[in-house]
Image (tube, rainbow, N blue to C red):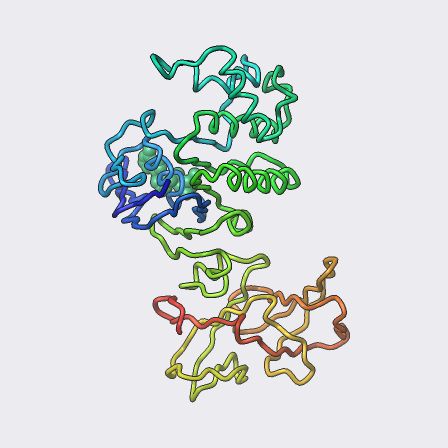
Length: 362
Ligand code: ADP
Ligand code: MG
């Protein structure tokens, strides 16, 4: 089911005398294509949960509309929207078994929709198999690992055959390995069921790996929408550039003069068609190439070997961060006795931002 947001806005009144109104979701207009998984990504407090709660109907918007397919659901009660919700804290009933938790949303169906005991069982097993917990049906939540509990919550959300699946930081309570595994599971389940899914996370890597499209948010405002790689390769502004990527992008003060980009006193790259101006330079860690005769000179601080890659740690007076991180291949030779290290910078991994607006140039 396609979902469309039109000028969707949610304002919360400020509390106390001096408190200012918060615009948690500010004029969201975009479409979620049918059958896709879209990641809402942004730091804590940027309005992700508010956006999700507007979609599911737990919150009423201050302004704007929501469509599921052609149906305007803005005024529709949450239970009538046909959405499945999965939260960070699972929210399972502790005294019920896995089976009872899963069929819970189906038990109150009335009239022609009412299901027999065996139908309930059948539906429960169907979704339990999908999330691979069908061998745990008689256990109570306390007898399950965090990952298993979250699978039960996902099964419970799916059992109603929702039109839309909404997940609010569903992996945050899991340890690193389970998080990885469960996110791949969610991806698989979403692909199999083709249910249009909105997945909320503050973890850029999670959003990038799982989403067909990501919506990067900051302070209630959409910064950029696109395919993860597209957004990574062409960030709209400095915030997006810094939010995506691990290790994060390195940023510098720079200047464009006569078609050349200067960082400190060095001309580090040709930049055609950019008018002379002060800029902020963003250079991805993988955009540095060690070169004895390279155009960009930094103070060498050390190296970190991380399996496949080597991180070269360096400093530069124009850098905004205390340390520059350059990722180079493990075969690289770094002369640790040297006080300096020189790089070439890869054009596709380097971005220029306007000093005032922090929008990307070009
Ligand atoms: P996120 O999920 O991205 O961490 P939220 O959507 O929870 O962010 O919150 C967005 C902003 O709205 C925050 O500034 C938060 O304090 C505010 N907010 C959320 N819910 C309420 C509420 N019920 N009343 C007042 N302010 C709220
Ligand atoms: Mg939240």
